[in-house]
Each structure stands twice: as structure tokens, then as C-alpha cells.
Image 1 (cartoon, rainbow, N blue to C red):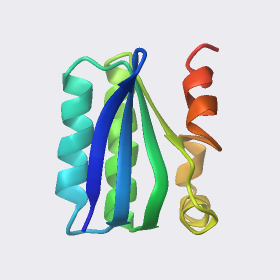
Image 2: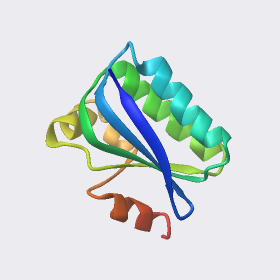
Image 3: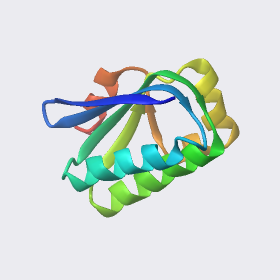
Length: 113
């Protein structure tokens, strides 16, 4: 079961995910990221600190959300992934397409450059 919250830090939307991101949750994750972009947020940070697992369907959702963001002149960055989750991104080479940061603060600061 995935739980999430969305809050603002300045002009950045912080999407906090909790739980395991698997095929059953892919539609919810897709809707959440799409809705956040459609609300006009140009800077989005996905907090992955409490994500235990990500399967291929959710990896695809994240890559597609990134592409959608680029098309809208927005950006999605990912922060605080556990070592285990980070390895999933590395093994699938998804990390080459997405922007990862150690902390929320680093991710927010990266929008400035």
C-alpha cells in the first residue's frame, strides 16, 4: 500500500511517497504525478525516503512523468532514495534519465542551476 502527501516548500511541490511501489500502485502514482504537473507545478521533488521497493511498472511511470514534465517546461527530481531502491534505478539504467539527490535541500537547490 502506497501512501503519499504533497506539500509546498516555496515554489517547489514536495511529493512524499511511503511504501512499496508495485504494479498495483502504478496507476495511482501516474495520476499523482500527472495531477501535480497539471496543477502548474514547474518544480517537483519526489521524496523517496520511505519507499521500500520500486518495480518496473513504477519505474516506467517515473520516466514518463519526467518526459511529461520536460514537455511542460517543468522538472521532477528524486531525493533520499535508500541504497536498495537506488540500486534498482542503477540496474535498470533509469538513473541515467532521472535526477537523483541525497537530500530534499540538494534537490531544491538543483533547480537554481
